[in-house]
Image 1 (tube, one colour):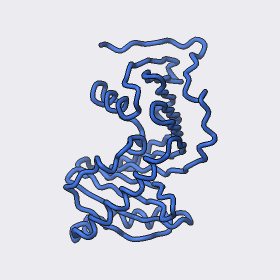
Image 2 (cartoon, rainbow, N blue to C red):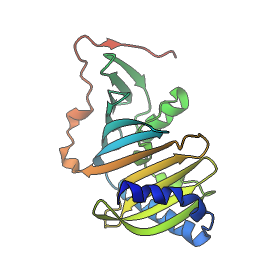
Image 3 (cartoon, helix red, strand yellow):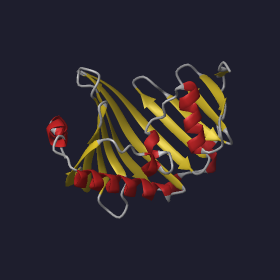
Image 4 (tube, helix red, strand yellow):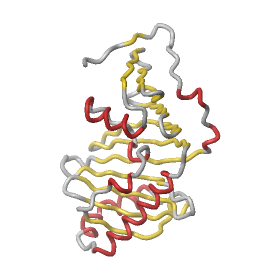
Length: 233
């Protein structure tokens, strides 16, 4: 699907969601739950993503690589216009290394990925890229008070995908999920309904073979001349 076609679908979403019914909402929930259930059954997985923030005519772009080894190991590499860092979760320690500042910080967190992400956000307001693809049981966390629409199966860069969308008072979320026997999320657009200047975020996701994951990927090795910083307790 071309960027123009996707933009047209996004612009028309407000009108289309206005006529959404319970049947549409049920089908959207079923499609999303199948995608999350599929991930829940994967002990290891890895994906690359291109994240773009759109604010008016400006864009901020980052390349992201995520490696997951459940239940307690996570690595996220981010390179781009603003952030250049790698984060590691291993043995109850969440490490952030900033390549530009040559600084790192170690944060004590729960051993599980879910527990670590919760603590990082609740205590430090750390927002993890594409966190919805890292939690287990995300299907059970879905809100119920939203409007939704199932646009059916569409072509996304040569692949058949279910295109669905849902909206509440704060944001509109558009998701393209593979219509194959591996219902992986391939593209996400989140439109902010509160901010002006047509603010929205999008992520294009490419899933790779989990065999590329190595146990050494989750071990932080302190670079030469790097400085450790400490958070206030």
